[in-house]
Image (cartoon, rainbow, N blue to C red; front, side, top):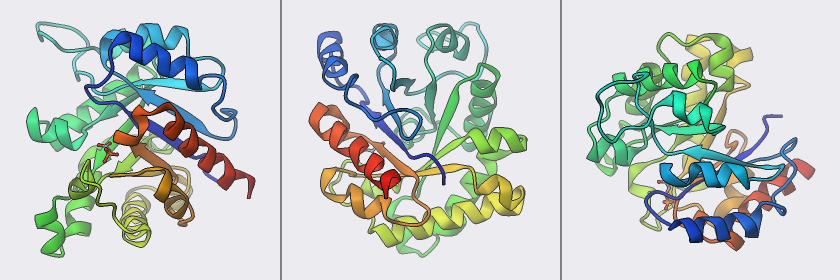
Length: 255
Ligand code: PGA
């Protein structure tokens, strides 16, 4: 069984005090990391403080990074620095980065390679717009995003990669894909990996669903065959909701 991951994506929320308060509220209560990976992805300036206080079982992630090692890229964050801060995960190619900061499939691929060079686990995001879904082109679109993201990765890297399937129309809108829709899209992503690598590899890659995940719908999503966890925006801002989500993942493991 693939180990579930619940990753909170705080986006541009929380001051340092608010972030620390959240960590104090959850760090001793999240499930054992042997069974569930509980991750919080925060704004870069607080990562150091959060890592120091993450405790045994919580892990900290960044929300983006640059593909180059260093240089004249004002405002950017390097993978080398994230590794130095003992950050474990980094979200790559979130749809908001693609939309507002012109991140491309090619750039996403470069960032994934760079994250692996610095021992960071990339959480690579893919997902279609409403327009693409309504045209019936979801699978073709997402499969192209996945192929581009994975270009040149080794078997071991793909096994360690985390993919987040996040339909753009479901992010922050309160509209969740049905568990079946989400599972079908994720199965189709897994079959793309099987085409590119062998089944042994795609069986190990964790693929999360993201888009309006909350305590009320997490159990139905996790009950699906191919959904290995969730990337959670809004609901991850509240410590109690975050704990409910990670405990649901633990309950799935216990079944
Ligand atoms: P949401 O965001 O849970 O608020 O829909 C998900 C995401 O953007 O990762």
